[in-house]
Image 1 (cartoon, rainbow over the protein chains, first blue to last red):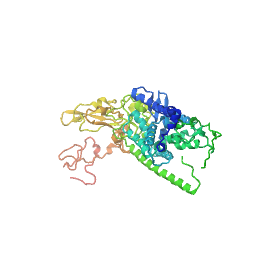
Image 2 (cartoon, chains in turn cyan, green):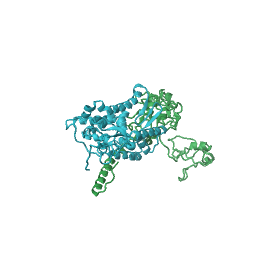
Image 3 (tube, helix red, strand yellow):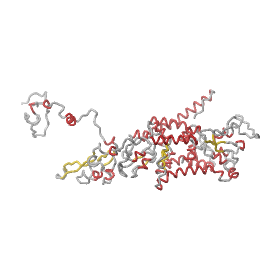
Image 4 (cartoon, rainbow over the protein chains, first blue to last red):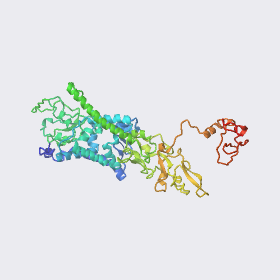
Length: 301
Length: 290
């Protein structure tokens, strides 16, 4: 859309706030993603073992176990209980994402996010229109299928083809042909389906969205009255459907906090808004009305 | 997840069709994945799992592909399968011909495993069963050719138990012995040092999964000599034992045996094994012979 209008997403924000403030959360996110990856890589690359393992399970400095609860639950569905450290690691990860929001995993940790963000960015730059339609709840069906399938086959099913683990494992333990799977995800998002992988298919993200269903840390639109409908936040958001209720909820009794579990807390909307409508906050701070006296919203839906 | 079923008839129909679409589409994906999962259980014979690994069926359900065993192996024996490897993606394995298992006493790979994929109750590496060595090619093994290579026997960490040298006459020279490396599966851990060190271009001794390497007697089989030694005596009354006729080469005579075709009409009595005249002079039912 932005290409049609001859305006690139976020230009206004850069003009209003400066490049750095208009990319603050994006930069922090990339730092987070690459720092985590670097922690995994200093072992195999430099022989300094801070973190061993990969995103399925890791052991940090010989004290901190972290287990991917999705993989562990598939293993349990297949009839196998992890050992003590595996269970402790699982509990730590679940509690962490209960607090910060499950899909923080997607936007702040997952290495595939960089790939699909790149595809989304390039799609926008090239002005690629048209996208195969697939419901955003497809991922939950796939999620359910992986659990049932694991129980039936006795194999940790999604790990047979999971591009997330393939990429992360590949970077740390040797890539082999895993890059073809990653390239497929990139091209799929670029040409076949806008925000297709993370937004519609990936059951890992779907799983984490369920963990973070009631997490306190949320993006909110406390200054939604200042919104000038530039649509940049919708353009830039990987899950644009989560924004509308909060941003346009004034007068419908909906508070400004984005409560949809599929918000990844990536903060791009915060960055890209020239009017500083969005901010990180807590879900409890969610008054029904944030309207200034001057603003009147009329909605007919 | 899915939206609540709406009230109106048309919307309900749409909801059912949408759900059917998802169930069918995702079901197809699931079917494909399930068949792939079944295939992935077929571990190639030469890919060995770390010590203590559960049977392959269970292993793929228990292993979460974290690679901690790979990291804690001091000899870099293990690797995680890449997508193009014919081993379930991300699972640990080793190839004995590349790097065999060095059978660490403390078994760090098992200790590192956060799941039950590597059996934590295995604390004695000598009880590991990663596979069984099989001297698979009797035609190229140097010892079978009558030479004294012995390398597999010498490198075996369980020497003289897992591999022994069995002496056989060398009929080619007529005057030497052949020292045949013989694997005893109850002691072999499948570490693969023999396969690694086999001096041939292609190893004549290889580690195979026990399933491939071992035959299995019928459950009802009893070995007479074992039972006899267990009981401390013969399990039958040997005095009542019948000795049936033996067919011997033409003209050959074996004292104590009766061969109807040999031309010897009478069996010799009083020889060992033929006490008390228990041996009938004729096969039953053939009538008398002059």
